[in-house]
Length: 96
Image (cartoon, rainbow, N blue to C red):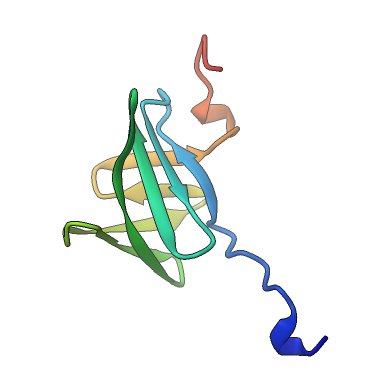
């Protein structure tokens, strides 16, 4: 196996990010795609993202663009504040 055949570790931001109330769930996938659910609406927004340092640029599948920044382990995405799934701020009562 050569170095080119070695699987790369996913970016540290890959995974599920959620609002404190759990209503918005944004999954950053390892293939530079994202899938965002809102309430019961699965895949409400989907698209691609690129990471430069702590900054994330999003382009949804309709061409709409947005940005985000990760500071101190919190994702500030436009007007949203998202936490890593499982973070104490992301917990709420009755959450599955």
